[in-house]
Image (cartoon, rainbow, N blue to C red; front, side, top):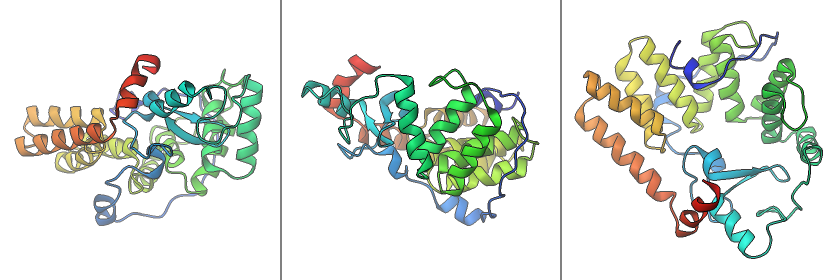
Length: 264
């Protein structure tokens, strides 16, 4: 099993068609996407959210804003736990109510809502939905066309590994490239894995250096492994470790430390 395949669950096959992204130059790929995108910053405290964001924050289906656990806790302490910490919409009291909110935003061409709904169809048994791979791919395609970098990453994985679509590694890589230049750490990690499997060790390290400095511990561990194998220098590992720690420090706050007791 490849490094890329170890990072995601398998899925049953289903046909799909989707536009091929334009090619990205190596210069653009390596010089862009070194900072986490806007969606990785809490809109309330304006601090970056530590990776993986799903562990340290919640995506609210009413407004599709990702709010850190620290701000959610603060909202609860102020007696507003029954509403969204960002938009103050009452918290959905059932899967059906949550699904209705997501569908409404997806119908309005909100790419994050389309991505959320696609993930629900892909996994199945979530929000009362049955697994529907073709529908998931259709929604991810729509989200990608609307510019959602997460959807590009997910579609890239499907094409790269032939999960639900005809296998096309080059197409998958181009999706990851489009996501990586927008600052998506998972896509950058996957590109590093691909280069490593092709024995392009220097380029793999460069990709993982970028995502490690965003706070991705998987990338940092890969660089550590490359260092022990002699494929990365001590200076590169030290730089990655320092960047990783800086990213973690920037995401910390007393409020978030208190929230760990409740959410993590």
